[in-house]
Length: 210
Image (tube, rainbow, N blue to C red; front, side, top):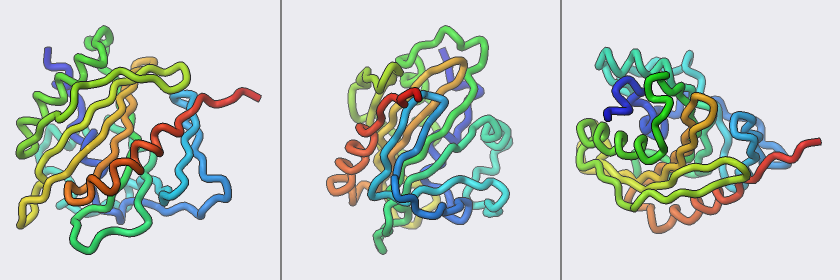
């Protein structure tokens, strides 16, 4: 089953778009984000919180000119980004975590998380150079919400040198939507930054009702 037939090709791209499309928020004393869609709270200590502003993204280079991709990107809602405070001078991207959502087409309403991961593997293998899933997808949960986790890598497009990118993804299904946390790290920094992303996602806890 081609679950991602009309899903956006932008579910992975938010981690590598230009930073000019983001609005940095004033630092808060308590660095937590409420995620009402999942009933969870995330602690983002050690990161810079930014929101995506599509009206400020005027760069043609940050998006494919493919008509199908452009149309499907409209389905994706980028909730927020968490960026590393500093970017390595030798890296094209800054290590980050992004959180996005997209509606699940009605005809795929019976699909499982495993179906989704299998479809991602097939679709992205045809889009990104040397894309591969590196780990066996693992079921996990945060609060009452179940999800699936896996690790992958691919070659960053449109760069003079071969630059590999590693991603860590946590995928949730809820009420007709797919929600995805994606940690994006340059391969050269993976051993250093991997644990920080894992530890941050592990802070997800169920929101307490007042």
